[in-house]
Image (cartoon, rainbow, N blue to C red; front, side, top):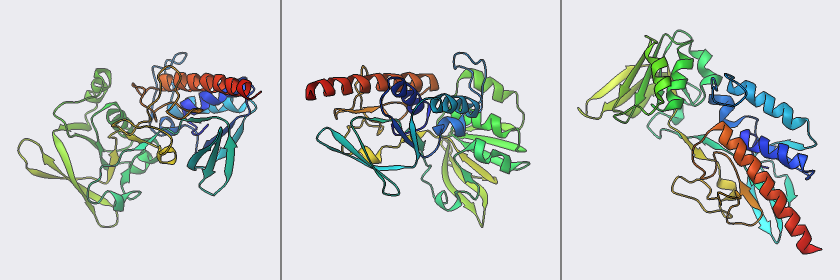
Length: 304
């Protein structure tokens, strides 16, 4: 299993319970959920729980089973006959009869001038990691979806002023989250604002955006920029074994979670199953694990 988010950990719990010799390889536990979800209010059994707390419960449950865990990054997956060969970043090799890709997605960059230079110097993709560093400072969140609004709510606990910039003419966040933001005076939402450039000397000092309607350039003096414009699936290591859709998500059979390569399954934010939710990722992880188990049983029978 590649990935330690909700999908990967659920898959691990399922395969371990089915007494399959299981190795889970992940850079860290929790994926986007540990970094982003300030408060989760729609996971059954918990009226409210932080992403970090839920991940810790998942990890504890996972480790209660007989499962090998390798903290590492997978760089390449190849298939030879019925066997998969996985190569990690530090050139370790593992062989496997089935693989579940649950590597999630990485934050999508803005791709504007100044972004790369100021990563870690004011530009961040993780509010829960970096938010507290901006106490009493002015910050901007790029993105007017749920993630952007949740980030702004979290930042309002530290920052003296929070802007939300949305390039579209309409806010995409759910109404309940919008209502929470409206109650906080220090948060200002600006729609129709297209980011042009990030500026500063050693650290971020300002951001320039263009007003869509007037085409006027506006400079906002800020010390922190939090990018919340979605994510891109982490799939480069399996690119030769799967098909992708227009969003670069792995195409799977929705009934079995299988990719175009036999024995290679996928689950969670990395694939083309819609509605990126924690509870859905868990369900997809379980489905991929059951499908992998059935595949292995059939393969074993065919060989004997």
